[in-house]
Length: 453
Image (cartoon, rainbow, N blue to C red; front, side, top):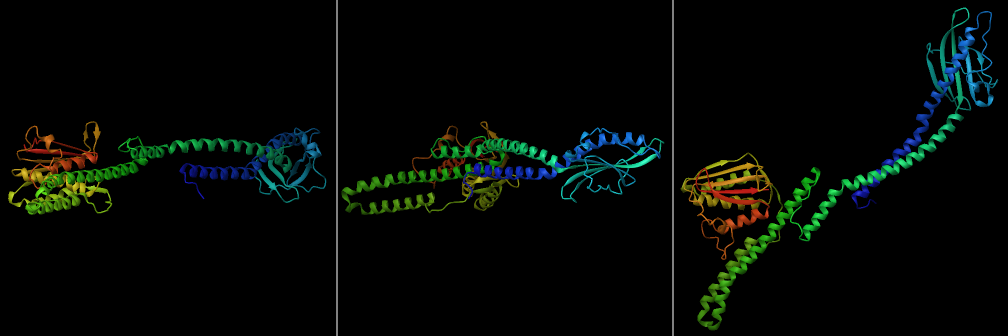
């Protein structure tokens, strides 16, 4: 069963891969290295052997028989215990064998198709004892300056190569073990460092849970930016819902103060105040119903996703065109085909709908809606800047900050820039954006500027 830790999972996987790799290297070392080692060794033998044969051929002719020197450059050809053999063939017939060769050992016949000056290495398994063999064909001149076709053969048993291989395998096993341990340590450190951003996210989430931070604001790798953005959007969304509930409960409590005060005054002479009591009870019931509807008390988790602001603007534009048909408003909608933000769809409708509706209420005849992508405000980058402008009278000087505050009395039935703008401002702030306003340079009325992350 795999551990829960991603670091340990990856580390164990690395261990299995390295163990499999090093085991494969050690097991295949015999087959890959030993033949190359034996070939190189026989090449060394045959180079000295070739010089001995050339001297012997140079002194031979039709009358003088081929005779090898008494002492060989490779001394082991004269040692029977050396397990190193040498043969000389003339026109495919053996004419000499080294003293180290057992007399009963059959001649190691060279291949018939061996080209001139070509060397041919092979592993001979035909006998009870495995041997490595190297043939080389030469054209040599005798004492009469005649070319003669000779084939040189050197052979060695596998004992020496196997002994050397065992030593190499022992050294290889030790070095591979040390290298593997070093690599595992390095890989563990690399994995630990590579997964540090995930641990940072966990720490930041704990800090958010403890109230020390408001959002994930660290420097995270590109691969984690999508997760970070989604988590921030989710955190913001939940904070928006919580703040809304708090505000609605505060509004509810504030709204009930006046009816309760009236009821308290009616208790002294209840019989004469029945109508007033019933009226205030009805009013309180209406307030409670209204506030609960605003707070969306129904247990429901709204799914947040990428919302196309341009689509929302088009739908609200179509609706307001019908609502304010009598005013014959000229809309100037300058927006791209698509522009996405990550938040709740209802928030976008409430922000855009509220401000566009106010623009239509207060305009004389023209309303302009435009979008700027990737703006920068107060040393911060945003996804978009939404302009909603009108040619009305605008907000009186000095009253802009007042309309952004929640009033002491909740009454959204008043037309104009009232509680709706304060709600919009709260939503934008909770989403991590910014609401700004001023005089429109183009139309001369109000210019709402909404920065959304």
